[in-house]
Image (cartoon, rainbow, N blue to C red; front, top):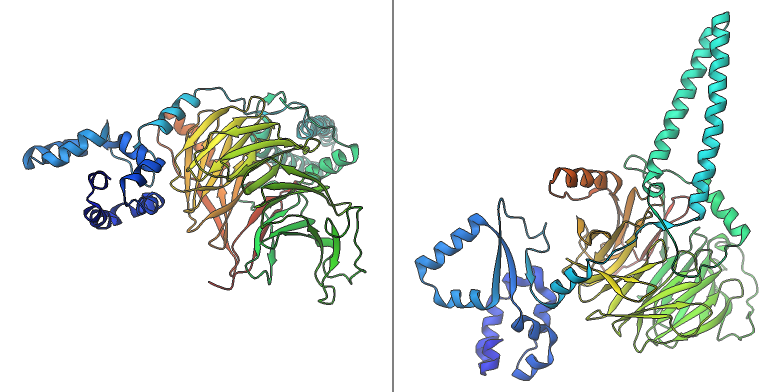
Length: 569
């Protein structure tokens, strides 16, 4: 860049190409941007070039490496190298062994705005607990009450058995019964210990006015919670994979409802299609337009393929659809598009209800809050926005990212949202104030997916390189990197009790990671002052040739996944 400023463009080009390979691994995107610098004007216009020239790089070294460097500089009298070091580099010398670049994302970092800002922001307090008086909490209380009554009943039974055995009679039978009761009690304890990650989490008050949950919806959720499968590193989930065929590269996004009964696809031709899993394979019904808005707003369509693929077609967007998501109860659907709008659809009426306009550029992602009614959007205009279904203007605008906001995710208590960006950072925002309260730095490429743990303490983020990072929201630090994917991580999902993390990637695999035992080990390491270890991958589930677009754990802990068959590779 100094050569370009001095007007030596040709020499700058040859220097760039000579040393490019050395930095390809960590800074490929930055190199692509810098390749276009051909004149001093380009340097003035580019934010990256300005930050590189104005700020210093901090490089972490162990004492031994630092001493070797000093000895080399003294022996060779390399004045040019010494000048570059003094002008552009600050060394942070640490005792002990040096850490690998792959393990520590902070080994080489640019000192300046982002790092200093992150330190300043991350001092703010985060209340990461669950909502007070949630359905899950009521379920926990009901289960504990029923356990107490069962335990009392069992105590009475064992006393009766003891009396009978002392009186004489069927001693063997009574001993077997007592042993069986003990076994049942032990398995019950194990089941409860798995859910403890969520039940131990602190409770917080909501900052938003939450909608009232209908009684029938609450009953269905309670039924799902009662029948929930307990998952751990030994009990892995069943997986149901929905594959889209003959999409001709037109499918941009996909999403699955909480119970897996509905699947939506957003397409490049501006259409949104919803499949009802219960109706697939049934004979077709006569197609009729539904809703008062006419066929352009919502239309029931059956394909001519002997009715094998009936779906509901939603038309209204005027550009490719990049995101679609169901409300927690499946009665509404949101879609966002390159036409810079978000549309709300009714799955009951098969009609478009509202068109939300506020963003100035394409909207890459939209997500309903865990309680419904509120939703968040992420856009190319570098902002995230919070909306409510009953207002056409956004309630909050979150501005601060230096590039596109690619993905957005709600915290489980609805008081915070997280955003992932092309500027390689993840931010956590307070919904009430619209203020950034956490900034997570460590990714080396654009962040494409986010997931919150059920207890609200941890967050996982996946990037374009295939790296997944798990963050502690309270401290703002990276807990552990998850290395295993070879391409973009498009989707992440925690199991309902928080024991497992599932990741879906463009490398056509779903991977399952052991979160519960790893976080326990990390807590032990923190108390001992040890170093962090990587999370353990439990299983890799490859598809034949289907990149994984979306993942969803149902309330009963069944894992749903979806993707479009890709025959190109």
